[in-house]
Length: 150
Length: 353
Image (cartoon, rainbow over all chains, first blue to last red; front, side, top):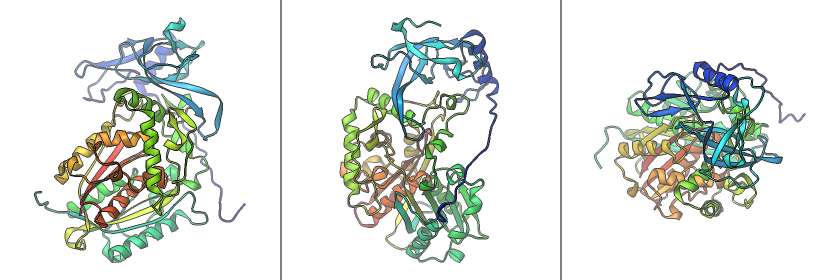
């Protein structure tokens, strides 16, 4: 060890509470393979995942509105490096998807991207099985043209 | 312009580092070196002439919890009023302006630094900023958000990838004459997060900037004045933020312009965030400065040329702007910062000489 470099490491663990809104969202994914959102009637905005407050007017909301499972691709990127800036053996495509009925987007993987994705393209969620109640209950989004179904 | 009740001047500037690594020098020593330069420039004794000290840092980047405990000694701030703003350095400038204009202090030192070379897992620090419930489980680097935003921005505005490449080339050409620039020679079009490439991404650097801000009475004649500051955030969540524009920078700029009594057309020099090349173009739009001549935008080379200084990015832009105004290169200048992925925090300072 060089006297000019003293090693250190942060080794701490967390158990994050998703909260009422996200928990309802995750239960919707797990139990029914649906995306649960919340609508603020005053703002005319539907947020997915569900939340118990509107970030625009701070009204109380209910996690009560189902959105998707199809939606529109808002943007996409091909990820070629990992978090340590090392090249990925197989690049992964990620996208932002605005589910039908929602005003917000979800970040997730894009599947079956043999061809280049296109902004505005119709995509559909592909769910895993079994599901445990997390974002990983969704495998990703595939082009509707692929015929991917729930 | 209507005279302000209390103007805040820049009495002193100092910096250290601004290199890819600062081997053998600790962050405390970087801070000491920059602070000593700033105090000498201002002609002040920090132990008696500075009323308050504002540092800008984030614990996890420093590798130390409660990092504000580690800043006083190297600034001459032991047993003095010190606070840490957990954000970019321009937010610290805003805090100092408030301290001075409210009468709490007549001289404030603002500090921010980067010792990025100490962080072995820098990308993991950034990933830890992702929402742990909704985004982090995907395991993706937060810089993917820049790839997503760049593609969306190109789509919405009709701008081209080659315009972004031109920004990177131009900033690095500007950097060739900047002694603080250590990335003037990067030409690497390797795609990282398509359409974002390596050469359009600012690389990490070490460095520290200290500014001494004072009341008008205590500011030497002919100094630069910070006449307007503004700061804002969009919705921070990936899900609900505005993906089509730099909304936070727009709001921060409007507040700073209004407070300074300045319109975008008055700005003659702009040092703006260019963490990614497309962000420079997007930020110029947000600031109302898209028509500003190319040689008046980031003549320092920006972060693409100087390197990415983490929370010190905003102070690096402010430092370059202040130097430009001091040199007589412009009368009205603007510095703008963005806190980087995955944030939507932006701050703006409008300056006059």
